[in-house]
Amino acid sequence: MEKRKRPPYSQNFSGGTTQLYKIALIPGDGTGPEVTAEAAKVLEATASACGFAYETTSFDFGGDRYLRTGEVLPPSAVSDLRAFDAILLGAIGHPDVKPGILEKGILLGLRFDLDLYINLRPVKLYPGVETPLAGKGPEHIDFVVVRENTEGLYTGSGGFLKQGTADEVAIQESINTRQGVERCLRYAFEYTRRRNREKTLTLCGKTNVLTYAFDLWERAFHEVGGADYPDIKREYAHVDATCMWMVKNPEWFDVIVTDNMFGDIITDLAAIIQGGMGIAAGGNINPGGVSMFEPIGGSAPKYTGQGVINPMAAISACHMMLAHLGEQEAADRLEAAIVHVLSHKLESMSAGKMGYSTSEVGDLVAEAVANPIK
Ligand code: IPM
Ligand code: MN
Image 1 (spheres, helix red, strand yellow):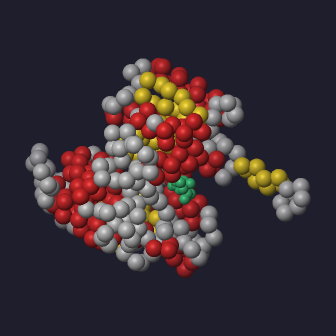
Image 2 (cartoon, helix red, strand yellow):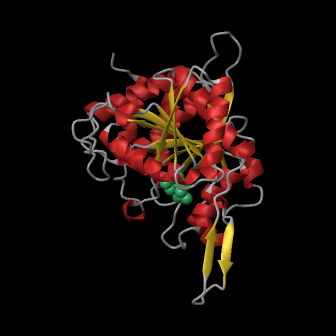
Image 3 (tube, protein in one colour):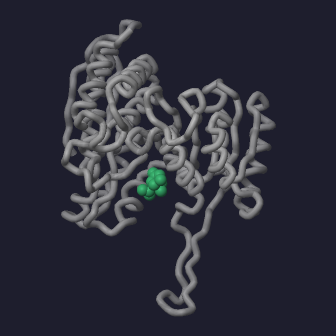
């Protein structure tokens, strides 16, 4: 753990001292540290411009630490992280570690143990960013996916029978609890209300085949919505149809709520229509505790250390973190800077094709935060 303190820049408008945000940084593997450094650079510029104070503490969780110690997370990790106001994660996944170990041990481990039960993934095409969808622009692609983040097929429930024999059986169970489903739905309804756009929440499921799991989801959806959110329009779409509409008519969506596995899959599709992994960010949220913000993309080992990876997703994760902390003015200022750099500077969102290095992109955003173009 490496600690870095920076002084509060100013006092807040009510004359009291500014709150000191405690931010945990987990740069992680591959290009994670490179993009996290740019997010940290932009955080510093935003704090200077907007007058909030924070300190960062870095944790070395990731593949290198695992190879050195044999431990995915130290026993104190979860309780240590609970003491922070927010966590910014770079990427997890190391070429020398068998796939699954770090993802399950670190990323899913933190999602589960910190009870980060919402995975919030905004899908917004910014002006100047290319989408593979013909004839679609920023006015068509602006919705949010609320993915359940602690249940479903991700609980690791199941097992083998007669493993390695011709009679082998592999079972992987989807766990859906009324409480887990309902808290996710309530978050999604509240979010849709606060977002205040189409006031439409679409449940994405598979009620025609998953007749237990999505029966529970659908019943809870209508019960909770009917009782407590009559102002929110309820829609339903099967997951396969959701994929089709996301490509054909993404403008139909306002907020989508879905289970863990479907949420994982549809948000890769969603990420590519908003410009790709270079830009897509998400928040793992525990509304009553610490939350963790991350680029949706992975550790991109082949680009590691070359200064070519796009840090915008990590910078966008930082933007989500500021909004989550309630620093709305800072979040808006940072988003405006992101939009400026995306629309006027970057040639492409792809690694090595941006027209700038990773750290130059961070510099451009930091500069646009410091001196906003009116
Ligand atoms: C994501 C990732 C993870 C997931 C992997 C790395 C375990 O794909 O955050 O979407 O499946 O949730
Ligand atoms: Mn995924």
